[in-house]
Structures are given as C-alpha cells and as structure tokens.
Length: 334
Length: 253
Image (tube, rainbow over all chains, first blue to last red; front, side, top):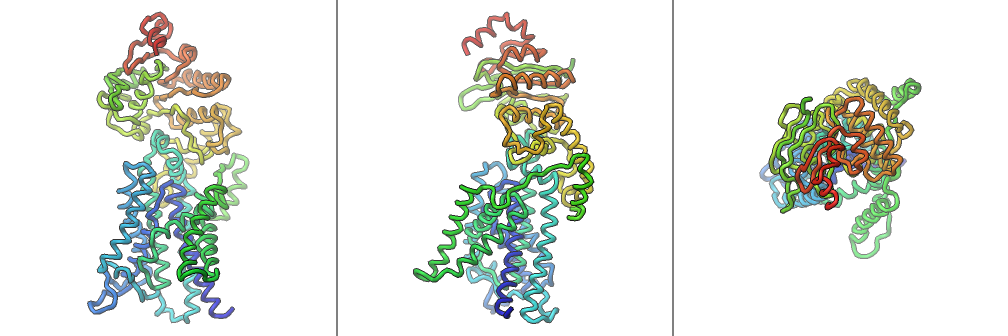
C-alpha cells in the first residue's frame, strides 16, 4: 500500500475510533437514559480544548494564538483532564436542563446552550483563541517515540483502539447492569419509575455525566491527532451527525451504534467527498447536511429500530445456566 | 387494627376546581379498602396526593406512623407505599421479566459503586435471587410464557397484570390500585379479581379504586364513598347500599 493510502486509511481508522467513543457516550445519554442531548458536541469540544491547552505550553503575549491554562502536561494527563472537563460540563448543563423540565423543553434548552457556547468561544478570544482556534498542539509521545510519520500514524491507530476498548468495558458496566436497566425504565416511563422508588433525576444525571466524560475523552483523542481545534469543528449540526449514527445503527445497542458510527460519519460522509464538484464552491459540502438529515428521517420513518436494534436481555434458566455462563466467561467478566 | 395509612383533610384544586376538598380517610393494616364514587368525584386525585405524584394544597398523609406529606413519590415508594396507574404504564422496551426486576428495592447493582466500580461479581447473586422471585410471581399470575416479551407488546389485560406484579415485586406494605381492571374484557377482569382475592387472603393491605360495585363487594372489607371531592360515607358495602346519600351520588353523578 502506498504511503498516501496508508495515511488515508490510518486517519479514517482514528476518526472511526473517535466517532465510536462519541456515539457510545451519546448512546448512554440518549439511547439508554432517553435524554435528547442536543448539546452533546459541546462535551467533545471542551475535552478537545482542555486537552489542547494542557498539552501546549503557556501562551506567549507575542504568540499568534492566545488561550488560558497552557501547562505542558505529559500524556496521558491532558486526556484524563479532558474526560473530567466533559463530565463537569455535563454536570452543569444537566443541573440546568434535566431538573423540573419536560423532555421536549430539555431538548430546546440544550440546543440553546450549544449555540450560546459557540458564540462565547468565538467572541471571548482570550479563552481558546476565538474563531481561529488552537493549532500546533503537540502529538502525544511523538518526540519520545522517534517514529517516522507513517509509523506514528499506525501507533496512534493502536492507541485510539486501546482507549476505545477501555471505554467499551466501562460502557458495558452501565448498559449490562441493573443500573442501566433502571435508566432504561426511567427512559420508558419516568412516572412509573419514580412510583417504584427510582431516583429518576439521579439516574439521568449519572448517564448524562458519564456520557460527557466519554465525549470529552473522544475530543482529546481527536485533537491530539489532528493538532488543531476551532469552533467551526463543533457547530450544533455535528451533534445531529452523531444522532443520525445512533438512529441508523440502533438506538440503545452498543454494537449497533458503533456500526452506525462506521456507516454515517465515516462511510456516508466520506462517500460524499467523492461527489463531483457541482454548483458554487461549498455547495456539495452543504448538501452533506441535507443528506444526513434525510438519512435520519428515512430511518425514523421506515427503520426506527436501526440496523442492529436494541436487544432483549434474556436470563438463563436453571438448566441453561452453565452453558450460558460458559459463553459469557469467554467474553470476559464484565 | 392500627391504621397503616391515615390521611387528614387533604385538599387539591386545579384552577378553581376543588378536585379533593378536605378528604380524611384511613386504611387499617391488613385490610382491603375500596374507594368508590362517580366520575369526577376526586378518587384518582386523592390517590395521586397519597402517592405523592400530586402536591397537596393542604392536609397531611401519615404512613406507617410517619408524616410523609412532604416526600416525593420515590421516597414514599421506598417506604413501601406502591401504586399502580389507571392507564397501564409498562416500561415498553424492557421485557416482562426486566419490568419485574427493575421494581425490586435496594438493588446493589443499581448503584454506581456496584454497577461500575465493583462490577458484576458484586450483584450477580442478588440478581439471580431476583430472577427466581420474579419467575415465581409470573407463575402465580400465569404469565410465565411472556417472560421474554417486550412489555410494550402485551395485550391490555396482560399489561394490567404486569402492573400489579411489578407493584408486588417492590414488596409493598400498602398497594394502591387505581382501577386495576379498567378496560379489560370480563373474563380477564375475573382473573385479575381472583389474583387480588389471593393477595388479600395473604394479608396484603390494599386501597383500591374500582367502579364495578360487585367487585368491590366481593373484595373489600371497607368501602369509602367520595362525591364532589368529599368523603360522603364509609362502611361495608352492605350497609352503604341502604344509604340514600350514596344512592343519590351515583344516580346524579
């Protein structure tokens, strides 16, 4: 394979890992807990910003970019801080929007928060360098490893895959446990859940913050790879790309939404890259958003459960127990 | 008999309408109490206030010796005050078995500590016990073959049964039933009545809204009659049948 193709495929693989992490985070919030998390992209964005500024050194007064909190921290501290930042932001947004509001209003509030955040970061240029964004973020371990550019690409594919697997193991502890079941119950009928003693707000906040942490980490993995991040990368339509991925893949199913991440942000949007350039410059790019919207509508109308629907949890009976647990043992204890 | 539930002078208005206008009632430990009255009498509103789903404008609700007037529904449920809903409220995208499991109280696997930090080993044994208990319950209610069905796909009558089973899975001290047979065919209604009769025989305390007076007569030890937001009478069904005020309420309402 030529170096150019290797760059292309390794880059796609890293994007895929980032998108899969992100849809797992969003699936916890939307698919499992039923929160219309229309501010989702913010959690990824704050993770990316925090990872960037903590990896960069302190901003110099004469430098081309201005930002807060340059700290020169070594990998993986910026990554962990990004998760923390995503979780904290989710905590704040959750406390504003998940209490005392009907779910349709929650969606509105989140959309407004997402739009507001873009304006704030655009205009308060001392925070994260405004619309120009941050760039020249050092790649983690690049200097100490001393790899060639292409070898580093593949190293980073492996690194993001490992982070992806770790996140999956945590996500499964949510979705495969009685906690996840209680979240799904609160999703299906909050009044009935409360009448059975469930703390609906706590369940939603838990899913929301966990999703925020995961989104923050995904943002850090992304920005450490491409080395730049600006408000143009996290406009609110990006949230709907992830929502579409979840609807296409199968709301509530971890494997399904991962397939959705492969089909929508990677497959579908990458395919439009090969469309001939028609109309004025940027016309095809704009069509992407139309296409994503149409795709979401088609699935909502004709295939609402997605490609791999939420599966039924069956419980082994006494006779089946050994065999079923044998299979589970192979899959790992989580 | 001591009173498990004691409601004093509760009031609830919607706009200018006094849906519940100074209702006091009590439910003795171990009894099955019926709550009857014409449409719009305020029965469901009273039940909503007792369960905490509606915030009362005044009055107190005492349960098991404690004043629970200020508590939200989840805390009342955790104390053993469990309700069912007039319109079935299954968790549609959970299976029947999962609907039951989720109703169990104090599940170590439902905490962040148990589910995420400690992992499956910390709750697997408890989960198996719950599954066994849920299967017993399904066997009693002849729903065993529906175990893996999505709750949203059940028929109307099966959803009513699920609603009662789910309430029982929470191990209630008091079960509030809001028209447990509403909208099901007569055969199934008799089936549900049989199940309730069995629960009564087992000593479960119940407060039940029901329109079908024959059912109330067969199931309930005591009956409370409401009309226009007030309690107008109480006693056994037999004694109530002779009261003019009760008859009027039904004829007028």
